[in-house]
Length: 192
Image 1 (tube, helix red, strand yellow):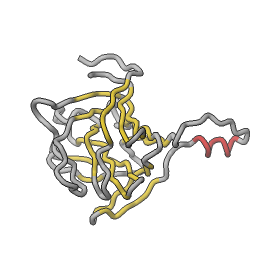
Image 2 (cartoon, one colour):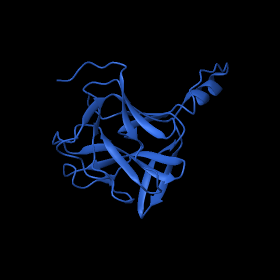
Image 3 (tube, rainbow, N blue to C red):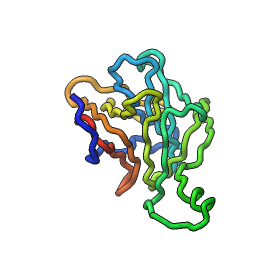
Image 4 (cartoon, rainbow, N blue to C red):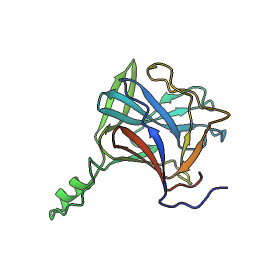
């Protein structure tokens, strides 16, 4: 049974994409086992060393086939770049203050291995927060353990793990950040 939201967090491991054109896509906007159609998940694509792009993928066949889908006027996620170290700064001019605090990283359109991908830039050493914008609540994010990556497949994320060792965590906010290496953390845990 789901627990009420709180400020606890859980370490989800490394971002899983270090090599150019590699995809990490183990965060879903609903449970991967919910039989929902369409299914949505958060995908990060490594553009080059030091820069990734955060976007979404959609499946119309319960997770068998995934395509990069990003519609700017109907986004499924909100991405907020909090910078290298979020700092509260007072800027007296209202326009300058609004620009300084907007926090939305620039977007880009990329041709990666023959596919057009639109998404938000996510520099590796920034703290970037992702939340769900699905039209209906509960606006949760779901982490599902995936199989180990074999080699450096491009634009393909490994399959969801079933059986021993498989994990499913539910939370409200996803943080990409860095310590020694880039990592992710789920915030406001609902179920652990």
